Image: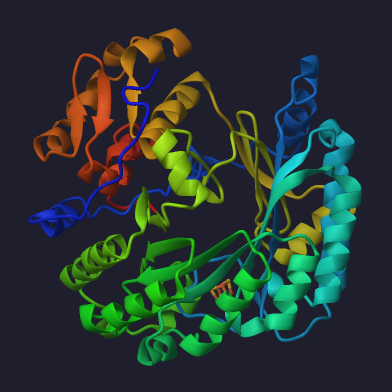
Length: 468
Ligand code: SF4
């Protein structure tokens, strides 16, 4: 039994909140998995993936599937981008790429995984809508022939508003997509110009209205704070426009400027970026305004309307987290198709080659293009449970832990519990004989709290301060 069966949402941050944001402003993993993908090594290759796929059918027990397809192509580059993409205006590479996706899907299916339904299907990129409607439809149909899709599967797609119109949205709906995510980032023209991603508020507004009229069940909008020329003044206007759109979900990510690692970011002038204090003021303002507008804070960069399934799942303590972020779907095995795609089958984490030519060469040669992986040990799995409980339920009970894992939590994690004291002192966490539980404010600090239990962050000695 959880400590509380119904979870309340964090209320409006009050005084001292920005100081806390500043204190715990530590870059860290987004924990779409634990261990994070950076822990994969090249010693685990296609064989580990094959064995993991094979082991799904042992004993007749199989988990449902989540399917992710990566489309790497983009017609133009956004300067903040840290994604794996190929910038091109030409379509001549698309046909070969779609053939490779099909080949890879068949290789996976032949390893025995096609027997469980796909309950979650997500297309991301790059820009999935770089593909024409005909190419997208063809790809979806090919995948449907290979994998059995559940009747009510969540089918979501990331959409760059500059690449679609109302008619295209209608085509996507006709292909079965029922969730849509628009990449917006900011509505301010100066900010948009500085990051090379210009799109008018009016165009996004009419697309969101069209998506609703077409019956998309959930409309998400991605935003970024910390971009060049942003200030509380400019972002307040952007937030007002965002709120007027009334999306079901909002993802608000912090921009991390790492030009040495991500080449497009070299086009962003460091002097144009808001300083650390301004960044936190912008974040604090965003949290205030979104909550005042009625959005619930879900945790780790995400907001949703109270009527949205994510909010309901969070209230009921049944939220999950996977590579798509927060989800209502219970744990499924993830099959990632395409260049750089990540798969997770039980304890095995796998990533495909991040280079398009290498990916296509490997798939054409052997059906898969794994270049690195990681098989979780018992300690990884124990820590995964703790980290996901903090991120999704905001609490865990020591007695439950003993029952499930045969581990005395307080003994096993004595060092980690010691490092939680600063959060307890700041009123972000309650730690007693029963367990640990986030306070309402603590939900805004789930990342640094979860990082206390991350063996790899601790081992690096960086305390998360230099970890992506
Ligand atoms: S942000 Fe999206 S559209 Fe822009 S370059 Fe990156 S992947 Fe492409």
